[in-house]
Image 1 (cartoon, rainbow, N blue to C red):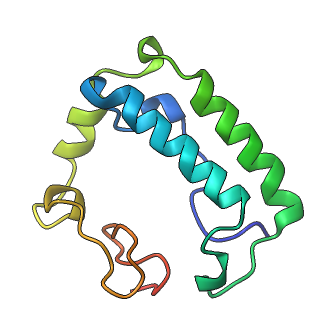
Image 2: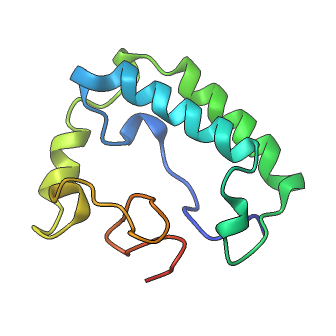
Image 3: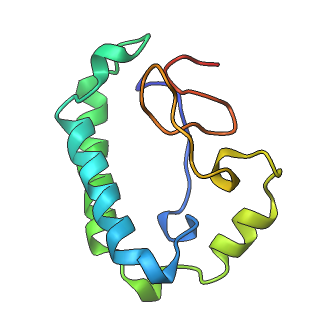
Amino acid sequence: KVGDGVVGFCIANMPWDAATFEEDKRFMVRVTDAASQKTGWEKLSYRPNAEHLMPMLGWFRKCFVRLKPTDIDPNSLRNWLAQMEEDDPARCGFPKCPHHGIYLTWLGCQICNS
């Protein structure tokens, strides 16, 4: 088991904003770099299987680095926002968990699992 999370998705279909694409892409590269350095792993309620995860993080990083503005779906952000509830964290200024300092999702904190 690698860990709990998303089974699969297309990076180009993420809700990219053309206006902030390069900045957002750099953020995602930094996220994969931090995960590769095991940043924050001590906060998790499980231990990721590094043997399986590290090659995937390397592949994931390459995908982000190679992604170009012409690869993204220009409707993905609009479609993503249209499917959200009004109280979704993405519509509420991207609040963070007060205990862990990470961005909340519609499921709550991914570390607290609440």
